[in-house]
Image (cartoon, rainbow, N blue to C red; front, side):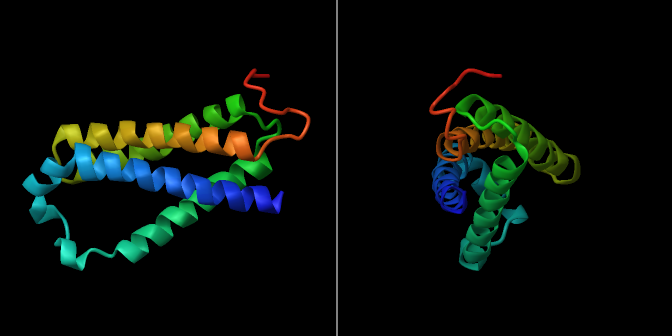
Length: 141
């Protein structure tokens, strides 16, 4: 299972990086500019730290799925991923909104974006880390 966990971790990292670009670099770009006083200037961003954090989160996501989800399938993966996305997204979106002066649309987008990222990560994990007998079954069990 080690190679599948490593492969799924790399794939989830790539998917999350692509979705982060769309969410933060396209959808929320103007809101980040309008709230520039809340963020480090681009030249001071710690992007290396950010990428390490995303890679670590991808590994933890895949590891939990691989070790704790009994039946591995695309359906179980997407269900797990969606739950992960809701759990993390509530804290990211609405937890931040509760303590930071960010626009509501930003909080909502952080929440919904995290749910989408969770679903996508679950899909990837379900496709790569699956029971040998399950094949590509999408039937919930």
